[in-house]
Image (spheres, rainbow, N blue to C red):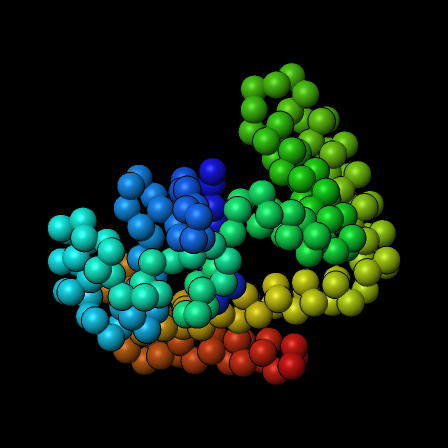
Length: 200
């Protein structure tokens, strides 16, 4: 059975594992080790590795073998089907409708880039439908639309800051002076700051 391994709300990996009668997680005949457990940090990585190398798993400190559910270290292991059901339940109606709109734009782009005889009118029809749905979505979910726009502007500001840092060193043909590079840097930084001030 497939299990999701989660720490701090983020997926670390997914594994094909079995759960024994005490709730321990085993993969391919080896126990899953919780490297953030108290037993692991107390014994030390070298000691745990030596035990595992010799397959003397019964000598592992208590709590080092990960268990199904939430472990004391915060590591969570849950069936993939349960995790997916939880994720689906967390999706709001606004997010679901927005995903449908995104899918229309994706389909339009895919058809446009294909050799289909419909790669001109087809994408136009799909984009027109998506544009209408998006306009309706913004009216129906103004808070979500505002947050989406804010996130978009935030990413734009972050991109400007990245380009500004590169402007201090990038000169493709050697024609820019240090003053020119600084000027480009400052201009992009000012744009980024203006955007960040506007979305606060």
